[in-house]
Image 1 (cartoon, rainbow, N blue to C red):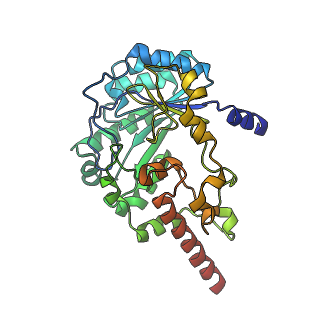
Image 2: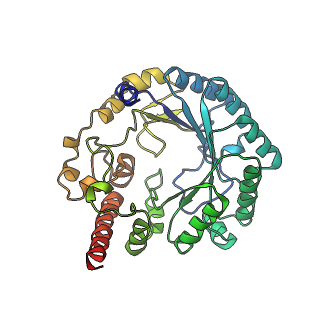
Image 3: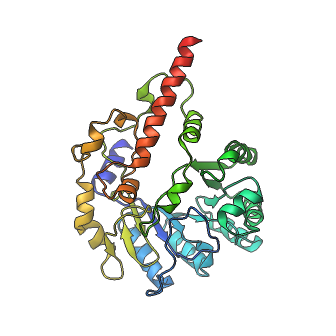
Length: 345
């Protein structure tokens, strides 16, 4: 399997593909990085999406994520999912859940999706609805979760941890554990795609981030090496190699986290873009030597730097990510403090 994985990476097979089927959404989340739907361009049609899926399949894509915006706003979503299944994709959807009815839950069950990812931001309506900007959204999301649980659909709850919900962090974890569902909690908040850094004001502070980090360090961790990435020889994740994303207007990106577009499927084929794009070639050629500021950093061995976040925050794939720097520093502080406690015991 290790040889197969290396073969896939070396040949840049986009195993993981994502399509933003719409930029429209029925919520108004305060931390959202999305731009409003374009007025000068139509979203990709059903036929265009089917053609994109065929192209992705030919390039070797296997795992497919359909997201938005809110994907359930597209009336053709079921047709798209059925077509994806016919091409042997393993699909999942990311949704806020508010539009899932009994009928929709039945359709989701029948499609045998890999999972359904549902955004949840609090354990009370007061907190969740304040973040989504829509009263009643919490109850609708809760109903969707129960509808899917009753049908044994695999659910993964997604929570962005921010200043407005941090005080419910532990309750959120316990709530998910009580429902026996997967729960992905992340304190990462991105700048808006139009360049605005307004959402970054919602990030949790250093004290809160240290508490979060402390709760996620491996039990009994006694060595800094245990905090490092499995493969510290890679300059970044496999974006642009294993990951491919397409937005609601046919533009192609190295991953779903917004970076510079590498092509447009309304003008060129995916094969041409994926294999010939000079921007992708540049991304794939990045080595550790190119990360000049990061290379000499004392925290480099434990840093989970995201190149897309670095690009969004500071304008360069090869530059620092301000948030990764902050997190790595605090991880080391927590580790050292815990080691001191152990030595005193």
